[in-house]
Length: 160
Ligand SMILES: [Zn+2]
Image (cartoon, rainbow, N blue to C red; front, side, top):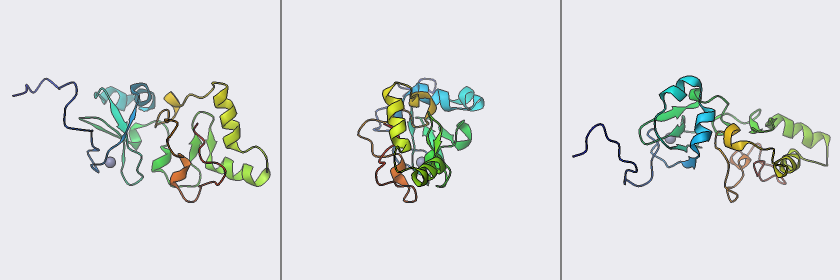
């Protein structure tokens, strides 16, 4: 029998599941979760690791083995959880959906995605602590791909 005071380091129950919808999440660095939480949530959160829950249908943003954190626990609006239109697409450089729409109308040239890529190349991006889903693995499909209204043809991903 386990003592009620000991939490096994890695419960061998398979991957963690969202306590609300029962689905899996994507692993994020602890520093990302810490940077994203409002002070109250930061004081409360105790799980050593959390997964990011991207689905718009689930109110959970992060969950750990014993807790869930919701939109109101996170300091920035969470792209995946908000309706399309004026959401922030690039957290590091503050580019929103409305900026992208405007620039597409105004210029045929440099799209925000290209600007962002250039900035990322210069090492200026800070997704680790500014983007609620942390740094995306290179193979991850577009962060903007989730919404048909903003799905750009030439702009598969703003997060490089
Ligand atoms: Zn969920």
